[in-house]
Amino acid sequence: MELREQFKEIFGCEAEEVYSAAGRVNLIGEHVDYCGGQVLPAALSLKCRVAVRKNGTNFMRVAATDIPARAEIDLDATENYKNLKWGNYQAGVADEMKKAGYRLVGCDILYDCSVPFGSGLSSSAAIEVATAYALARTGGNYVDKKELAVISQRAENNYCGVNCGIMDQFASANGKRGHAVLLDCATLDFEYIPLDLKNCVLVLSNCNKPHNLVESKYNERRTEVDSALKLLRKQIDANDLAHIQPYLLEEHRTLLTPLLYRRAHHVVSECDRVRRSVEALQDGDLERFGRILNESHKSLKEDYEVTGKELDALAEAAQKHPECLGSRMTGAGFGGCTVSLVRKTGVEDFIAKVGKEYREKIGYDASFYVAEVSEGIIDEG
Picture 1 (cartoon, rainbow, N blue to C red):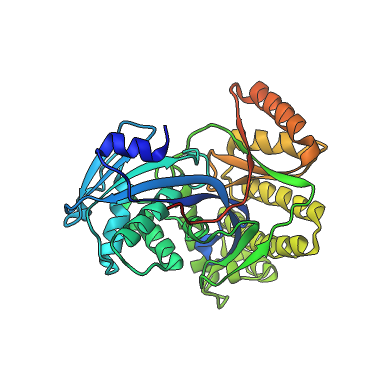
Picture 2: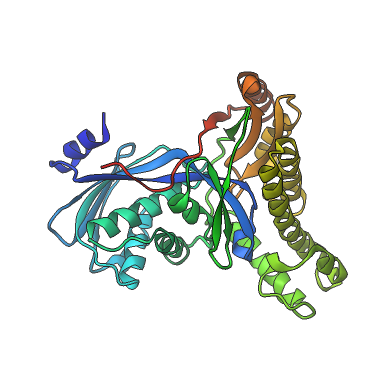
């Protein structure tokens, strides 16, 4: 059933507008966004679509097309909904928008999300950004996509308890078709990098092991890198771990425990990989870019320890396929997806062979998506 028809069936009236915000794939620059580093995400054609209508009350009523959960959020008491099993992300966005001075009006919103949940492709960010955009437009506010991304991040940090960086929400809001976004997470300065994949495509492989960032070791990793930075700043003048040069980390590694050194080494080396990846893409050297993807996965596995047997099985099967130029986990890890750069002529064989090897090694199937790079926020009318 079409989204507008479902809206009418649930809420009893016609939707006024339909908007969407994108899921994202991070090409390179993993676990450096909260360390002040540069990242290189791209918005995907996998979307969170929302149909919206003002309802003449002071409540935001939210529903979804694929689950029976419903929620009613009093816009005068948005702070009271942190324990909702579904709807807390929406309530958190409304709460942060109120704090930022946005005018909010009661509305009905129906969500239809094609970003797989727990995939590491930022379904939560797509929901947050779509909510922020819908509330901003419905309330007649001036819309700044960069500001909506920051508000969405605050909602996830302050309301939902996930200490994420800005990358996911920024890419979801500001992505551009045919381009990656080179984002400096310390300053929010960004530029679009043309993503000419020539005879290749991006294949996303979902290991189908759900992950929950609040319950995972994501926040633990943040604590570890913060601790590493605090110790290194005894000898190094740096505001962020990402701005420490590799040679300085090596000179002062005795300040750190072996564990904290490995965490810091990932961040510092990954920031260098972002720089080299941009150069490779600008030079049109996809084979070099693919090799850097492989380097990134190795670092995430050995230094940062956020991959796990499922993501490792997918990446290792992909990396040895003759039509794959490179593969790495993408997202927070502990489950979710890998991203692989694959020649178009070999995609079908790649999916078949990687899927077979994964099933034999792990015991259940992975899911595969051939990704298209899309706009972030879209007004569908």
